[in-house]
Image (tube, rainbow, N blue to C red; front, side, top):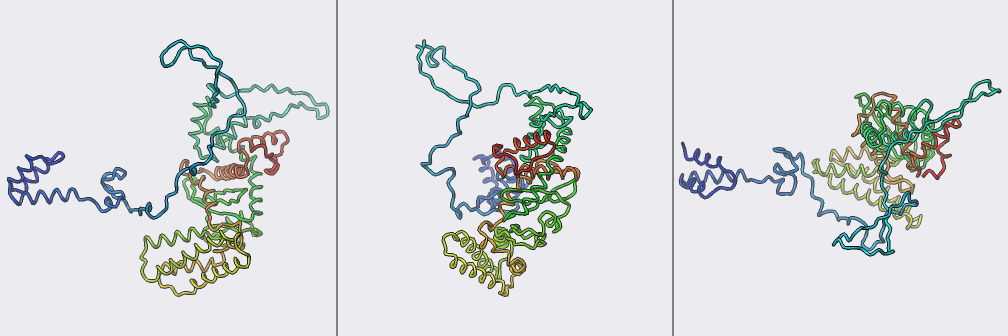
Length: 482
């Protein structure tokens, strides 16, 4: 056996740090064996560059065994100023408000001293403590309705009073119906999660098919509200739009969201093109549409504001992942500075004289035109110049409309709840299910935007509908339901 083989065998038998006996055994094999062993140990202990920079490495506990990270994120802790968590020091204390009622009272008195077990002398001193908790019994209330039927001599038939506690022929009350629909379509709970709460916690036996059938009936009644919301978004000053992928029976569809400060409407469509926008935002819409640069929104002939955050993010992406030679540094720096100057100017509108503000807005437009007229050679600069020229009149609309922001964050936040719901569910199985999804999501989101309790508002509307045969409008709901 060669010296290298013997040294390799000694290294293979290592179980932790090398012992003195193992080191002497390698030394006894000669100089070549010692050099071989040192080189072998050095190659085993080499640290990857990613580990030295603090990023995930192959030996990082958060990285799978033998896996290397696809990319290394920049450490921004030194570049960004950290914001302190919580409120500022010295702020007044805040706590939950005391309940406005007490359901029952319990008195507690110690039999002996809890420290030494000695005898206690009774005193008149007491203190109070309010505790809010679920009752020991959370059983569902079952109500037997005795419905009297009487003869009407005018109509020549038997009549009976209207029961407004549940839909006709339903054995589940309106409260349970609206609660489970709100949990699913507003909070994103899955059917199995809702059944777990109903079947085990509330001791209320229900099946998934029963829930779905109840939701279909509810959506049929509330469809009038969906049409009312659709009419309301045509009258707003600033309308936000966004879309995301959705699945229907395993096939790709699109979830569209059109929202304002007081109304939100969702629709699930097979297309991601302009006809969907025209179907929901009519041609006579005279507000400002805030969106990203997706081409489908170009079909509308109205004032628009494109999201500048998307543009700034595109500049950062090119700078980080693309070849930034040629004239890209100058282009990226000029455009980024222009966008940020425009954002700062809009925030100072109330502090500036109207004439001064208009002159500075004109200067912003002039700087943009100078960037567009320059002959840029970088391919990504050319690509963005085409986009800027196409939407030149839609970049700085927020400078002239104070109610319009420079980004589409409001629209993206409005659709985020549906995105989370998409991760938890299998989306929809049929066009009918997609229609139910659109109606109930729109109703619950809009009620929340208007400061109403979604469960109480829908339950009250169902009561009025059963009594009168007509659903009240959203505007007719009392503010006390908030």
